[in-house]
Image (cartoon, rainbow, N blue to C red; front, side, top):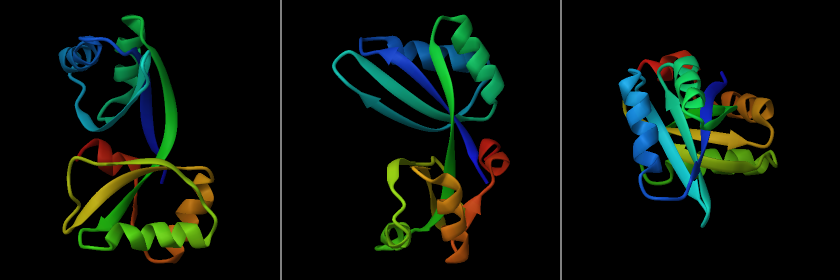
Length: 143
């Protein structure tokens, strides 16, 4: 139930984000979800893509530093308080959310949120035990 995310370290200067997206587009890699965090000097672009191996290879070939991280995709009820239910479940288990971001498509009536936890396997078990739907990576890559 882990989802493979790639992280790209990029200089915080004009054109670098455009370059990454051009490289991926030229290689036929589709971006399914993304998050960008930056400082004054560099940024970390986190992506869920349809072809992780190709994305890593073409970006490394162009000189980018790329790493892989396991994250978790969870269906979140798309209504007021939906996200709060999940976060309360995790808080009750003392599981920390390191970061999160939204997926670009819905899953039926639900939104999909990508989470990075300090204890991924324990978070997955807790969410499943409470009846939340944790999505398989293969399902996301092709959505």
